[in-house]
Amino acid sequence: MSKNNQNKLTPKLRFPDFTKDREWQSNRLGNVYAFITTNSFSRDDLSYVNGKVKNIHYGDIHTKFSTLFDITKENVPFINESIPIDKFKKENYCKEGDMIFADASEDLKDVGKSIEVINLNNEKLLSGLHTLLARQIKSEFVCGFGGYLFLNDKVRKQIQRESQGAKVLGISATRLSNINIFYPKEKKEQQKISACLSSLDEVITAESQKLHILQKHKKGILQNLLPQVGEIAPKFRFRDFEENSDWEETTLTKVADYENGKAHEQDIENIGDYVVVNSKFISSDGKVKKFTNTAFCPAKKGDILMVLSDVPNGKAIAKCFLVEEDNIYTVNQRICRITPRNLNSKILYYLLNRNPYFLAFDDGVKQTNLRKEDVLNCPLMIPEDPKEQEMIADTLSSIDDLINSQRQKVEDLNNHKKGLLQGLFPDLIEVTI
Image 1 (tube, rainbow, N blue to C red):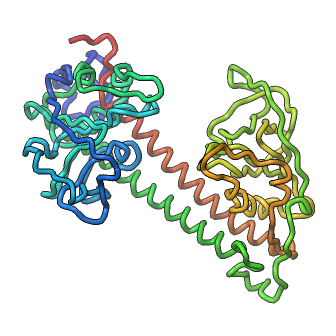
Image 2 (image 1 turned 135 degrees about the vertical axis):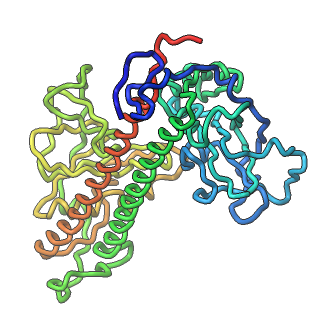
Image 3 (image 1 turned 180 degrees about the vertical axis):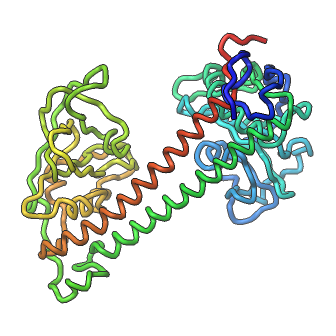
């Protein structure tokens, strides 16, 4: 690829075969795509068991479908066979090259999120609830180009600006038709861009699967190395400790000290001497950070910091963070600091993190708020031998290192893709039609 900034509608990165080609052209989406009628079937109208016609639900666009939708690689529900579908005309069924947009979202970043249908495998597919189905009026794009065009940040921002609503944001076909899209006239260039990004997506998918396998492996190791509810010993013990007695039954209050965190004023400029450990910091695995210059509740190496409050059915309640460095962190309110006494801090971290005992406090209706006595009364099974504690902790820690390394690899690949999406498409600033 080479860099070229001479024209407003020339991308920064362009494949060598096309550097001498004319600049890209711009058009209104409504001049390129026509919108096709969709249905409004709810989840209750769909089934994963059997059926003749599959259906796209907007929630699946938000959560699981790939940018380039291949029906052979996706788990798509059927329309229940009891529901008549003879009212749908031939043109209502999806075709390869169609774009499907989710027209509603509670989150600005996801409103108008889209997929491009690239393979139907001769199966019947309809576009359903809260979706907009767009079909090319003429064959302007090769199959696969549209998916990445509408994933590009310049186009996404236009869609976000056109969205309307308060609690739930929505976008209509009319407003979507108003946005500017841009593309090379030469279809070979479109194909090159699509092939480049789709091959990177394949790598990201493969590496994400490796991450999932590692996480699943860790879950299995945890179930075998730590006693489960009602057990007095783990299913598996290292050979050196097979003759040891069963694990000791105790409670957290007998093996650790407890202190609630304190409210901190966070630096507006996002700089400071200490990282404020709050629920967002813990739930994001340390990615979302706030800073302060005053440590009202400093954390030391070996401390375990736990989330005490979360929304119903949330994923943060009792999620823990193990402090591995001194003089860096300070504990915010609704987070508690647990300091082990004569106990390996790593094994206590693995015993406490999202422990089923704490999850039982979530009734799925109101916000969960763990009290000090709730935390301290947590029942625990602990091996008496410090060497066994250390070996278990080191084993689990080594798996976490592999998971973190793999997670970083996936993140780096996604950042690389983001950079390519910015570089392979031109900037629309000051461009008018």
